[in-house]
Amino acid sequence: MVATQIVARGVFHRRVLAALAAVPRHWFVPATLADAAHDDVPLPVGCGQTISQPFMVALMTAALEPRRGDRVLEIGTGSGYQTAILARLVRRVYTVERIPELARSAERRLAALALANVEFRVGDGTLGWPEEAPFDAILVTAAAPGIPEPLAAQLAAGGRIAVPVGDLALQQLVVGVRGPRGLDLREAGGCRFVPLIGRHAFHDRP
Image (tube, rainbow, N blue to C red; front, side, top):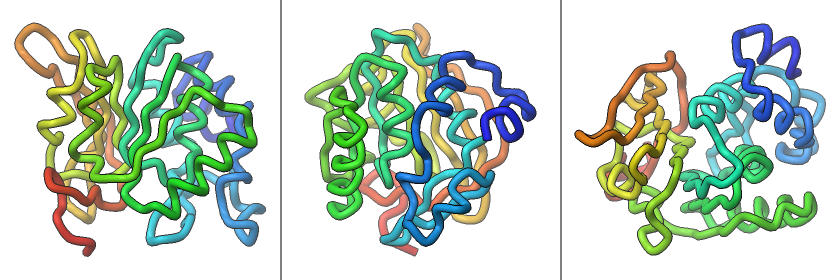
């Protein structure tokens, strides 16, 4: 998976590749889809949510330039796969999921992998986690019409953020770095994610 789907498509971040090789992706999909777990496609994980394709996980993670001492906020825990990748790369991950069932199952999976540097919260991810801010990096794993202001406000100076931005049909992965004048933004390619539901994104499930 790492060699043929990720390195071959231009992601070379050594630590990110090692994390992807170490985390058993088939643990994070329904048993009926285990044979497809390493295909480069998104897969359903229940509750109307998906696990992103491996390439997109690699691209978004590498865009954050994760460092061992970082404190990272993840919005949209889902199955916990992206959470597990981050947990192997940084000091602590704070992850917010609005669906309790998904949050509970993700927490069990990460415990089974002995990844103890993750804090879980059930709630509106567009509000972030203000009590633990500022964060060195923020990763949003669902599509928003723009970068939610509370998340931008919780980013540390020099911090990095990656958000799929657009409508419900197609988005651009937007990557930002907080500079002295605000966020310096760039587009990192087209993508398609489930919608981010919350006060500062899409308000109702489509």
